[in-house]
Image (cartoon, rainbow, N blue to C red):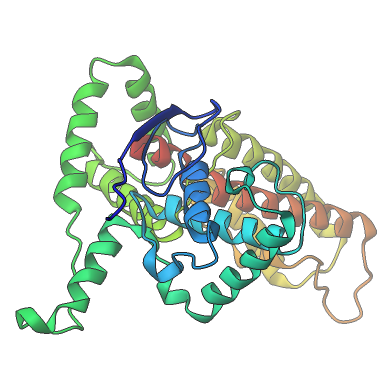
Length: 329
């Protein structure tokens, strides 16, 4: 007589003590964003993997997530906890529900890691799209389809529709309107034309692609205004360049230094706002003409200008997409 297993539904909120896991259970984890869903999924995965000597094995366990970010994070958690357990390091209460000795957990963790490293393709933690794509490839020949097919992701209509909705909401929402105004201020730093919706779309598309490829969010310094910070730093640099120009009659650098200085002073801060910075500023020291006497004051000032411009470029690269991340989210 076969044993009948009753499928129970164990519904727990993240953070509350949960009942011991059982392979026959359907577990529903109620959690808001950032409260531990990935953690609990990784814990469940390892329970299935290590709960018995004849464990399910990675090829028989499938974990499906919505985003690449969650899939990457879950794989990291699984491997990281297996590594800690294999080395008998502290894993907190992560493996308590297995009710095994530390030596037994370490032994099974080593075996699981070997299995993962040897058959990594069987380490099935992926997005829903990747999972469906894998199934389709495995049976492609049966439906007269080449296994080398490529799925084209045409997300442009959805992104454009979302942008239209956002702009409509921005007309009645002060918070959304402020984001648009912040974007326009940044846009006018180096571009012109009205309304720059195409530019918004193109930049959001880049954010969408990078976020999907890397599984990471864009980080930005929310404490400062991008436009104001660039303008402030540019003013400081231009002030030092004016001082450097005043030293030029007393020193003998190569001619392109004076040309570079004149170009910046004639253009003003726009040359930094548009990142159209002369390449000469990449040089940390002054190149003098042959047999010219070195001017210590000019050297120190040029070094400061060089460092300030590098810092400005770093800030620009790290924060340029900040407003687009707000629009995207």
